[in-house]
Length: 440
Ligand SMILES: Cc1cc2nc3c(=O)[nH]c(=O)nc-3n(C[C@H](O)[C@H](O)[C@H](O)COP(=O)(O)OP(=O)(O)OC[C@H]3O[C@@H](n4cnc5c(N)ncnc54)[C@H](O)[C@@H]3O)c2cc1C
Image (cartoon, rainbow, N blue to C red; front, side, top):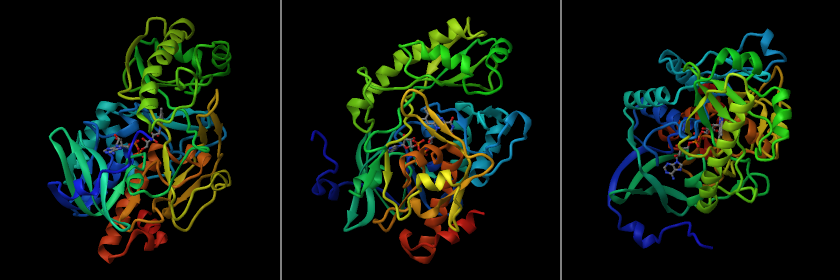
């Protein structure tokens, strides 16, 4: 073993104190933004800790680029009108982004719709919401360990350029995507399909596309048409054979979701290991370039396109999932199960990035619900998670992890923090039905 999970306890007991808060949120992705804003608006002293210099997580740093999960899946979107099925914070953020000019109209994606966002506008909307809610934000700060007594989480150790410090909280929301707080607590987590995760993707953007020519060839569906899939299948250098391209709010610009990232030796990577994570970033450079060259040579309208930039970091779909009181199962998803304590509706397909082609299993004209206690670890009185690290089986996660739903997991976690503070109860004892009612 070349890593150790925790710092020596003697080190932790002598740290200076940055402060004490009612609620600490670790991670400023979609789930963390929603959690921090909701808790801040309830009047609590809230600290949001984010290792990067901006919020948005995979949606911005990973340039994942669209809000998925807002609409019901239908048989033929070309003949239907989008029906929104999730509101709350997801709708609030969608509306604010749209009014900023940072979001497209709904675009067809197979049997449903997505809306493509602009990252600059996303950052502004998140910043404005967090500031208005009075949230204390610490960027460029990493949560590196927990301070706990028995199973009770008291605070955490932060690493900054100025050194180490500690923060204390009554309630902690782990929105790190990777369940970092849960992991540091030594609680049980699982990873992917027997340790193998969905492959990461390096997203990128291209400019100067002749959109009229491009759309005439590609069509309105953002998923690659069969003629493009056939071409990709004949190209050994391109590992992914089914791709998505999204016109953005900017003229002549496409957001490209087209790479499958493995090691240079084609092995599946474990991106919580920095050696593998680094290899993912490096391999990404060549896969993205290879796909860009393919576009220029083969996709009408892209002949004179230029490469705008890669995402800030490779996009990670899956790492650790917690062992929650409830677990979202594959069966719940394919049977569109509803729950009394359902906190978010989802009609998004199982979009599994595993193997050559992403597998898309549609849930047509229906949705399932995610139960509240998928956010609650079995142990750890003051700790709840929000976002893609919730308790879920492998295929189920490939559906429930998208942005609209992550916003709502964040809101649910903050409502639960409010209830547990007011009633002085732990997260495990919260009645999920009560949270579901508050959400509605
Ligand atoms: C390539 C790709 C394409 C995707 N496409 C779409 C799409 O088109 N539409 C869609 O809706 N969804 C898409 N998704 C899914 C979506 O982006 C994520 O599921 C969603 O961002 C998860 O939100 P989250 O808040 O749970 O976690 P994340 O977005 O992962 O955010 C976690 C945040 O925590 C921070 N953090 C982590 N650890 C620490 C720590 N120890 N200390 C401090 N900060 C920490 C990270 O920097 C990050 O900002 C895509 C994902 C990928 C990878």
